[in-house]
Image (cartoon, rainbow over all chains, first blue to last red; front, side, top):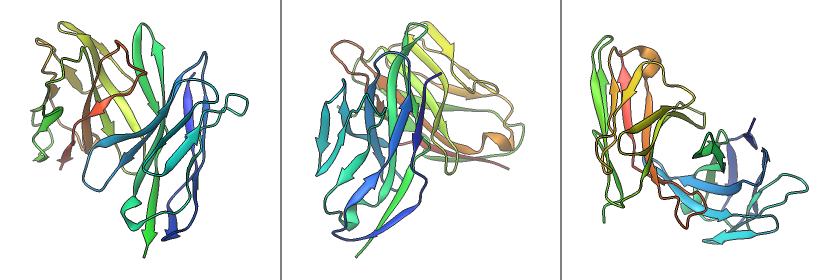
Length: 114
Length: 114
C-alpha cells in the first residue's frame, strides 16, 4: 500500500543552522508530494508541494525535491529561525477507490533555539 | 473567505456521552475529510465525503458517524464517547479541479474523554 516514513524526531537546532528532515515514500503510480507545517495550537498549513519527478517545491526558504529514483522528498532549509519551530508532516496524495486521499508521515517536531 | 472552520475548539466529555463536531467550509469544495491526530502520530482518516449526500469510511471509522447534507457542512458525530477517542480532530476540504491534491485544514477540535 501507500505509506510515508519520516525522520524520527524531535529535532533541536540552533538558529541559523542547516535543516534536513528526511521523508521517503512507498506508492503505486505517481503521487503528488507535500510538506505541511503545524504551528503550536493550530491546524496544518501547506508549506510546499511537488507534483512530478524532479520538481522542486519551495516556500519561506524551505525546499524539497521530488526524487523518484530514491522515492524521497527531503525537506531542507539553509538557515533556520526560531519562528520555524513547529511540527512538519510529509504527505502524499493519490487516488484510492475513486477518491483523492492524503497519506501522512508521523510528523517531526522541530525546535529552534536562539 | 473564512476557509475551513471548526467548532468547538475544546471539549471534555464523560464516557458514554455524545457530541457533534462541526465543520464548515466556504470555498465550494466538494471533497471534505475528518482526521484524528493522536500524540506523536500523523493524521489518520476517519471519514470522507466526495460531495453532498455521499460519505465513505476512512482508516479508523469505528465509533464515529458523519453526514453531508450540504456542500458546506460535514459534521462528525461521536455516539458513545470512549477514552480511546481522546484526540485532536481536524476537518479538511479539497477541490479536485485544477488541483494537485492539497487539502485545506481547519484549526482543530481538542477532545478529551474521561
